[in-house]
Image (cartoon, rainbow, N blue to C red):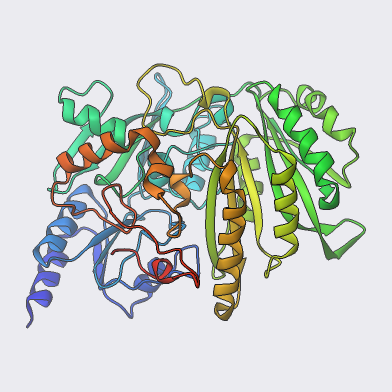
Amino acid sequence: MSIHHHAVDGLARRLSGYVREPGSPAYDRVVAIDNGRTRTPPAYLVRANAVADVAGAIDFARALELPLTVRGGGHSAAGYRLNRGGVVLDLALMRAMTLDRETRRLRVQMGATWNDVYRYVARSAAPLIPVGGGCLTVGPPDFLQGGGYSLVSRSYGLGSDNVVEIKLVDAAGRLRTLTADAPDEADRELFWACRGGGGGNFGVAVEMTLQLQTPAAATMLGGRLSYPLERASEVIAAYDAWTKDLPEAMAAYGHVGLEPDPAEPTRKIPAFRITPVYNGEYADGTDLIQPMLRLAPFDARFYSMPLPAWESVMGRSTVVGERQAYIRSGMIGETGWHPDMIHSVQEMIARSPSPDSFVAWTHGRGKVRHPDGQNHGPYPHRDRRYIFELKAVWTDPAQTRSNVEWAFDFGEALSADFHGAHVNDMDPLRKDWATAYYGENLARLRAIKAATDPDGFFRFQQSVDSAFEPDLRRPLDLSPLNRTIC
């Protein structure tokens, strides 16, 4: 029997979860993340059911000198939660939650998804809400470690601002309790790094404690207003001016892509859509939206519902599933949407090789810009007005190059107006990606990485200590899209 088989048998005996190899249904389900473009097959899948299982998987990977990556909800934009020929540690069995009603804090194991969290809170803690993700099948670990924009972030800050404790297993297999006031300075530094420094860099987060918030009303206004894209110069400019003066309670997201024509639903038309979310009374929210209603949208719908219900409506549109996808991101600052940017969006959407591709942006600032307290994490883009995401989505693998090059060129056309990029939307073709993701906090994050994980056990192509840079000469080298470790 080979050394690998001996090691696998030994690991299996230690686990309260289980280990699987290629060919089993459990293996296939975990490898199928939310992007059909990335199906990187590991040699071993470890499904942890306890902290000891996490430490055991780390020991196993170290003994066999194999890379290890961690899978949470399965929405890794670049596929970095998988690896070829190594170990994937899956946390999906670890979903326990405990509520402390007195402090309004929720302790969550990191195998849960936001759907699990919202259901638990609705059942056990209503009307409290978490500052969580807009796609219900996303897991908290990477979302929160990358900052995490919520539909209520303008009211309550980033998701990471609402994390008060992290249980993390480090590269030595040691469980550490990280808080802002931990006795050990190294743990305080690591707590800072893990709330905006990106997932997968510093260890395996196995549990977080979240500060829940009390919304301003039992239900929130959610809605959508759609305009023909041919009116973008007028409408996006008006939207840009309107959002400048909105209160923190109102967030107004943007989306450009194809939408069903209300007069003929089988036909899709290019459209600009506003998605407002108001943390307050429905009538007050509709009053704030009046300036955009006066611009005569071709479709306008408004709902009054609890935040988790609206999250579920919104999240359906973000799922890629078995389709192929490539994502670019950028931050739009003080200048907002000027005419050349609007023209570029109109032009590039018209040239899209796939009808499923779109651009969307998060409405930033508010409490994100001025979080409570001084001990917030390293997320560097708090003063940006919009967080822009371009998502190329297609079905036929043979069309990969045309769609990736379209999305790449689209991002480059806007690059002069971008100020950084979002670490939760990692782009393997992004120039100077480390500075774009981390800004002036890069050096401090690298120092924490070196102290916590000196031999770089936790690594991937764009981990915080990686020297990788893509080759952007034409024709584009697409190989970075097909690997997770270099």
